[in-house]
Length: 155
Image 1 (cartoon, rainbow, N blue to C red):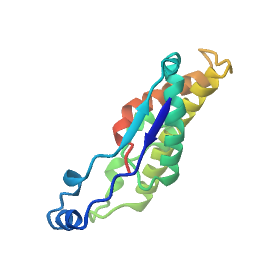
Image 2 (image 1 turned 90 degrees about the vertical axis):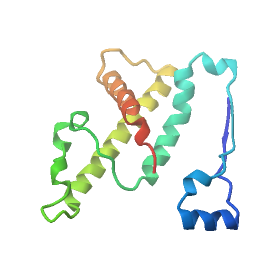
Image 3 (image 1 turned 30 degrees about the horizontal axis):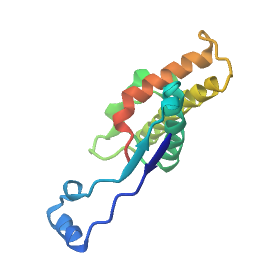
Image 4 (image 1 turned 180 degrees about the horizontal axis):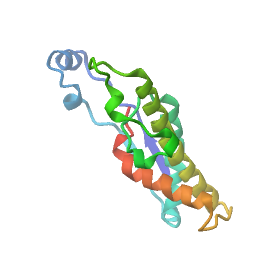
């Protein structure tokens, strides 16, 4: 397997000027060059092949993450639930304590995803993970969370 994803190309000075004037940066951006080659042996354990890419990407995302994303309380342990109506206080101003709780909840979700992909890699290396073990259930939950919040993995 070979994966090469490069930075977005730089826009010319006049494109930057037009983008600032008309605020169409996202429409005018040049395509991002990338090369992805999948060999036939990568398909044997595609789950592990993808986990080898996704886990370090999630770790880097968590390391650089700023802010939070609104998560469902049913996805969180009871001690972490958030009162989303208190996100804004009575003066329609941002409620910092609720934001910090939301940020912690989002980080917890990301760590559960990372755990799931780490366990997938370890399982492929021969570490036996019993189907009914707490780790296996946690892995399944982390993979479910990854699917649910996949479109929220942007910064």
